[in-house]
Image (cartoon, rainbow over all chains, first blue to last red):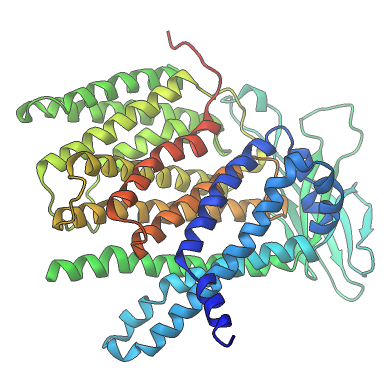
Length: 274
Length: 262
């Protein structure tokens, strides 16, 4: 019985399990493509309502199109465990054999794949936290001079002004007189301090742990008479997963650079000398 | 001239280039010249579409740019390539790569998807990086497959000699480069997703699942190569199958309805 945990640990970290899970993930993601095509409205609310409420409603009511997603979660869970066990085993073994390395740089480069492995777990944790613990206030509409307060907080957003840059040139006829860069100036306050900030498409604002993202705006075209006042539609999100998955991405990139350097230059030149 | 017309001409030049690679050694410069001409025409087609859409991202631009990118990699000096290989192998790899370039250009010409307008949210450096790194990654995956096919054609079934080891290293190097660029593309896409939509995944675009599938496929390949889980021929077959997998997973979504070229 005492050997059972060791056997389970070894099986969980096996490369055969990695290969099987990865191949199943390829098939599952490909099936996801066909399920998402034409049915993306089923998945769009996932970003706003979170994983469990979505699974209880949209997810369970349209299993034909969502089964791949539940399978994806299960496979990613197994992959995360497999990655952790495998990387931990190898890191321990690497530390035990550190006396074999005469150059500290070469020893450090050996950690590259393990950094990437741990980074994958950090990224997956970030995604999971994002879908489990985010506070999302989607589709808040603001007109100039109006303000909203984030529920349960003293964070207040006031829409001050709107500035547009129009599409210049004649290359795309459709875009003539259309707004290319909408920019809304907001006054952000928490009851104690306040500051102004500009948001645009692809340029969110972070304040008191909340991210404010521009979802929509009006007017979209120069001289449109049917819209009396400009407005912006924003979504406000407090997402604890963001720092995790950006940290994971930075770690993965570091590991990837170390690995590519080792593989493409150190190994190649080492063999050349031999 | 339109972007599509430049692509037709690029296709013709690529066909000549592929045919030129079968000429005797002294006349192969004709094929090389045709390849350069094809790349110039392809660059004009791609550049024109980019010019129209700038500063936004041209939609479904990846497939027309792919043969150009493969051509550039073929012509560029290979970084870190220290293995000496026989002329026969180099030629087989070159022919396979050219055949893939012709096939991909033919797909682009017959099934163009050039009728979508760019969208405002693509006006960020990250959308451009997402596409560009993705194209370079795919080009390396196709070149790895071209090398793998040459390896399978030239080596005997039970070969396990220095030639096999060198061949596998050359293939794996392409896969590593492809994986680096593909990962950069995915990360650029994630940053774009966050700054544009505030979410880690944009479910509106089903192609995201195909990007993930390709990433998992090549992670699996790297694990197979590095841990030597399968034997060398099985691993090389898996790499060669990568071309088909990449076409199905990543090029299919860039194809439009059939359009007669002339």
